[in-house]
Image (tube, rainbow, N blue to C red; front, side, top):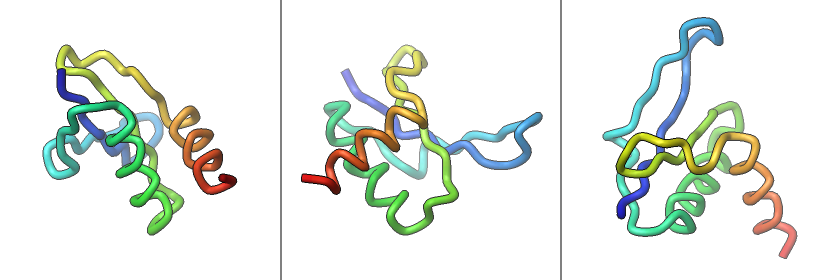
Length: 73
């Protein structure tokens, strides 16, 4: 199964999503690592990780928590 890193941007009441440019990853962990790299460059972004069926498996708040745990190690 592939995991897709999705960037959410635009107005909160009408968000837009960008998936294709950010890539697909073989594991959730690899997708989270990429999100952490992108957040490090621009902390104002919001990201989601979806599975192949379009289900959100990790939301923005969870990604930020995981990134802060990685940095704390």
